[in-house]
Length: 633
Image (tube, rainbow, N blue to C red; front, side, top):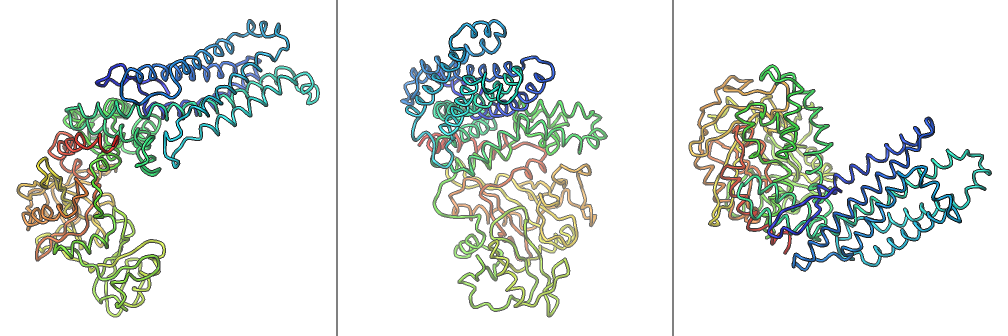
């Protein structure tokens, strides 16, 4: 957990943050194979390499203790009331203890000669054992009892206790060395290496506990510094990135954030940078690099280097390089302004959320509320949950004899959705399965035992869109956002189309294509896919039907805009909503709504980032206003 200095309005505060925790755990994990290799090498070459690895562990602990001592000094001068329960002297003593043992492990023959003169010879190790016991006792007594909620508390005391037990075993091996070596017939060098390996084991447990303890002690200091920094940043995209880091730090301290949110927030930092990002870049470059080399002339090595540059400079995940075509200088120059899922879905949307009880994720509840409000919504004709029919559909003994669309009541990306065409007297699935109206009803009920389900009548697009929808309902994703005055406005839109005849859904992430929509005129731009296939490209005309896409005006566009702007105030929990709207012959109709919309489709189709656009500026405005209350109370 290497020290990180964050400059805030209080420059004396030095705070460790979750990025340091992640790096520390990665380094900790890398030390394990290094120790095993050193042990094998020592057996072969008779070089005492395990001591060198143990010195690295002690050195790591010393650096961590120094960082915590500096942080404790800053906390004392900060005046926020968030003190360090251990204090600066405790951490300085720990750092000095570790530093002494770095010298001891690297001292070689000189240290061994000095230890040989001690009586008994294991006295030094006994003193270390006493010191370690005192450290464990101090941590048990002084560690904050409510530093973190019980669901995500690091097992610091357990790790220290197991480590202390292993250290006790190592001391026992030292005390009984002459008898044990003779009893087991082990030569002195192998015995010494085994003892060093046991020492490494308990040091690793101590170090992991130390990292967890540092995370607990540092989180509050880091959080206040990060909140202040995010509030002061003018650039919208950078503000949202800073807020994501603060949100992740809050996950280590706040009872408001559960384990699922903690894991998502941490994974957002892990996969977007460091080892996860490097491995992802290698995989993507092998898969997509050759096609981009033909388009741009850039070698695979240069593509990889540019991904690393964008990752470490702008925290962009490697897939963004291909998805947003950052290999094109026109797009690459705007790399810092692209918004990513870990900044929006894992942080910003949650910071902006106001809990009033209106849910979008449960599709039946959403349908019922829209119906009550008189908003045009795709009709639900049947629903079941946990293997039983929902109360409002108890009287339905057979499904209506028309084409139906069946999907889970929760989920996204078209997962689990299916079309059932009615050809009297059967409903037919694309896999050839045929069921009667009563049989399909029972099938839905049975499926709901694993996942709650609902049934809708199959809708058909406006006739003007028939040549680009491949026989499947094409929808427009319209993003609305609460503005500075409390009103709601459309900021962006993209029109989604399937490119396989008979597809159940038009979803962008399910292999469909999409076009940007000019929100003023409703005209479409060129269509594209997600950008993560060697065959990815841009289409002025539909790749299957040949019908013109680019420049086409969507029918009923103004009515669609008015509909979502009218609907958003009734779901005011969410500052941002992504509406899926079907444009039918009789006008626009809401299909679904997403309170944490994925913005990849908007940025990909527009070939422009959202960080410096209207939506990015509004989100940053909300985050600056709500961040302190959301994370600090």
